[in-house]
Image 1 (cartoon, rainbow, N blue to C red):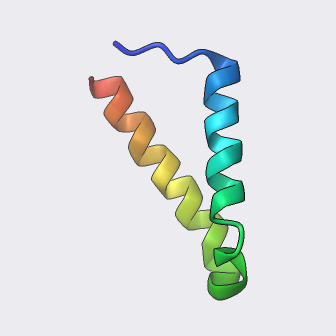
Image 2 (image 1 turned 30 degrees about the vertical axis):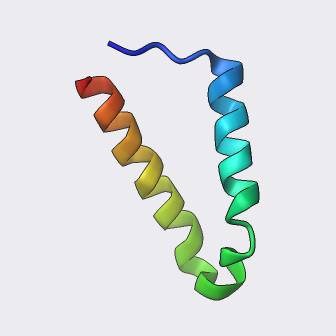
Length: 49
């Protein structure tokens, strides 16, 4: 079981969204659902680990 510090997790998510911010213009409405899906997959992997 991997425990992530809330501040570290928040910082990583913020950096990730900021890094891919320009993609929002390309994907329009699909951007946010894709990000949520990716976060869900990562969360699933972390829980399984």
